[in-house]
Each structure stands twice: as C-alpha cells, then as structure tokens.
Length: 381
Image 1 (cartoon, rainbow, N blue to C red):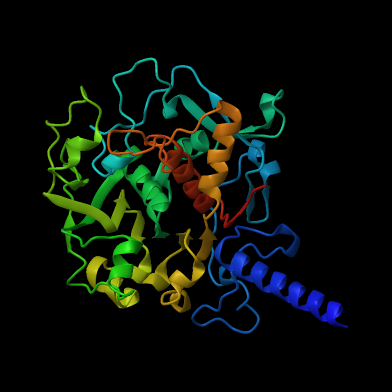
Image 2 (spheres, helix red, strand yellow):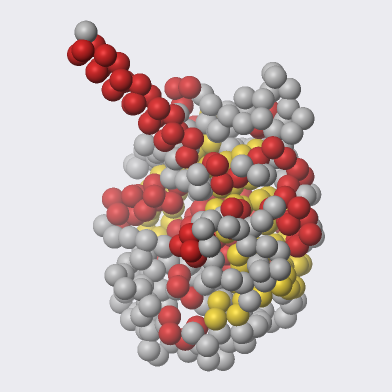
C-alpha cells in the first residue's frame, strides 16, 4: 500500500508540473488542439470562454499561397520544416546607421569582410529539401503583400521580454519608410526584472516610467532612440563609425513604444507589463491604447504576466515563447553556428540575443504572416 501511495503522489506531482509548464511555456500541444492558454475574456460566455480567439480574430483578406498550405492547419503554422539556407546577393535590410530603434547591444557590425553575416541566410519552410516547389518563403510573401502597410485597420500588441523587443525593433527598422508615427519613452527607470526585484516587485508608476515622446519619422536619418547616448559608441568594434548618427535624446528607450504604418496598422510594445502600475489605464493615458481593441496579441513571458490585462482582451492571443529557441536550433543545425550579437560589450559572444539584422527579422515576418492569415499557434518539434 505504501508503494501505491508513493506512486500516486509521484503521478500527481508530474500532472501539476505539466500543467504549470503548459501555462507558461508551451506554444501548442497539438493532440489537445488547444494551442493557447484557456482564459475568459471580457464579455465571454460559457460557450466561448475556453478560447479567447473565438471572440475576435484577425479575419484574413488574403488567400494563403498554395506553396504554404501544407504548413498551415486551421490556425496553426507548422515550423518543424523550417531551415536556414544561404542566398547569394542578399543585402541587409538595414544596419546601425539606418535604423533609429535598434539597441546597440544587438549589433554585429564588423570591419571583417570575411566574417559571415546573419542577413546572408534566409529562413524558409521546406518539407522536401530536394523539391523547390515545397518552399514557403514567409519573408518574401510578407514583403510581396506590402508588409505592415497592407494590414489596414489592425492593432497589434507585443508584450514580453527583450527577445520580443527585438521583433518590435525589427519591424521599425525594416519598414521605417512606411512609418507615419512612432512614440518612445525618454529617461526611463532601470528596466529589468532584477531592478524590479530590488523594488520588492513594486511596479513603476506613470510618473516614474519616463516621458512619452514622438519620433520625427519624416526626417532622414531618423534620430536614434538607442539608450544612453554617451555609452552608445562602446558597443561597436573599432573602426565602425557611429559618431555622425544624431540621437533623439540623451536617454531614449522603447520600454513602452508605438509604431504606426501608413496610418493603417498600429503596433504597441511594452517590456513586461508587470513593470507598470495599472497597465490597462496607464496604456490608455500614456500611449492611447485601449487593450480591448487589440486584434492580435503576442507575448513570450509567463501568461500570469498578463493577468491585469487578460480580462480585457478579445483579440487572438499568441505565445512566442519557444519560437526564438527553435530558430536558434535551426541555425545551429543548418549553419553550424548561431548568429548571436557580438560586440565589445558582450562578455561571452555570441550573445543569446540574435544579431540585427537577422533572426528578429524572421520573427517579425512570422508575426506579420500570422496576422495576415489569422494564425495564432506555432507547432514546433
């Protein structure tokens, strides 16, 4: 009997561990066909409370290309056939001198012409490596549709850590010619989970969070918003010219920021919602965001970080937790290397944060592709 009780206790522990893991880390467990956390949105009924995406989805105005159909089942995109391939003649979509919203930590600028560059490789889906007809080129498809500007009257919220910040910045960098407005915050407080721990977990108030300022996106070059201006050059290899790049302010960040493309698509980003007091009302006050109007929500932290805004959401909720690690695994498998950031301020390069341009641009394309075709699950191996 003692052995039976011991086995029962062990099985119970395994069940609770799996429940915890699924809530915070899983993208999709296809066998259960759930794919997203079970939450009840504001106004949800008993019938639709199990899946927030039943309330409002980003109904697609575009027909999914035939070559991509084998990889999409319902609202799920199968990334298990992803791979990286070298492509001759590719040019970087931007660099540290042309993008106003790239943290210097993420740069891989180098004077070494022989060093491989992240942007010289392309992420594709291809089930048969010997058959080019099976290629689904997500980046090219998104660009051929027109990028962000083709998503008229859509609102996207990105909530999460620095890996999703890179996706937000990649969208700003690659498609800055489509920008009609952008807002960032000036003089933000130390923004990290460690800094929050020192405050005993007390979120910052609106007053502490820093001023929200507009970016003159019609200027060329657009002035930099890239952290502390005096420390900026320290992130670059000797021989890389950064002194001629104008800074928007002496201390500028995108802890809370917005992008607007052709006055049609609005994208909002917040670094860890739990860093801000009363985020629902604070978003409305600081950046004019009504979270109940979001069509698409991307997150990659534990789902409980969204606990204050979850009851107000009605758009499709999408967990990007493992996407970055999946693409990293593909690079190591296919290219025998990881294009992590490497610069004088990185202690042990390559950094776990990828280079820009690079993987964040692939993730940005995945996000836009998902909004285009109403995808809110990713299947990975």
